[in-house]
Length: 71
Image (cartoon, rainbow, N blue to C red; front, side, top):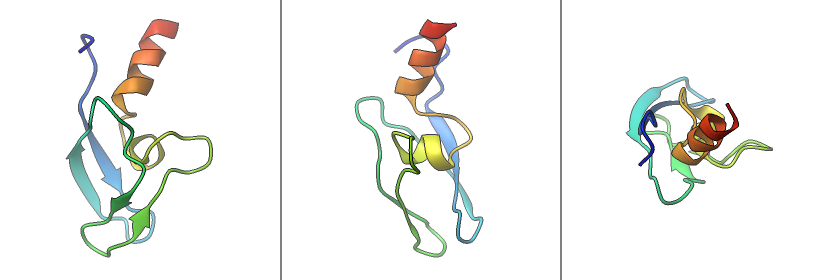
């Protein structure tokens, strides 16, 4: 894995505000996530590839990698 890539992100539920720190997969985008408190099913928002890029405090590893290449 590329140096400096973070593999954890805190996901915040848009319905209830509950936050949960989650490990991000490095080989696929997570496109469905259920809030551990209220059960709300999150899917990526328009223009985003996954739930981490939509609701997390750190974008997914593939986006992090792309951003580091662009810099």
